[in-house]
Length: 154
Image (cartoon, rainbow, N blue to C red; front, side, top):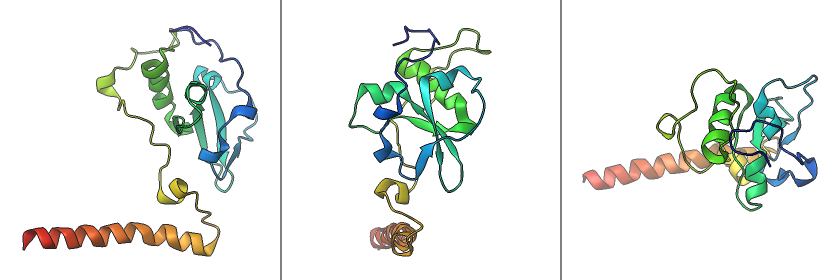
């Protein structure tokens, strides 16, 4: 594994150990060419099969625990990946412009992993029934919240 502040590539970026169960609907990125940014050497490049939206997934979080959802971020937001590598794993590229991130400037929370209810529950939104479940679920909470606020004001 890389030493602190060492941006050299992570060994064993093997797809055999990738936790696909947390990234339903994603596949190995089909993007051609070499990834030039140093953060790609420390994570996996996956893309959503239906939209080609790409995500960076932290290799070290996968190694650290097999049970928890590893940290990932949208490919457009690689600054988040850089911050994560420094704050969580003490890996930084010294040639990077600017200063190292601080906890005050970055949400140092456990990775959320899932961005929406369909992803969290592993729903296949191409299946009409599962799409309906995903679409109706947030409205149940909105109704409960409205009911709760009416009850407390009475």
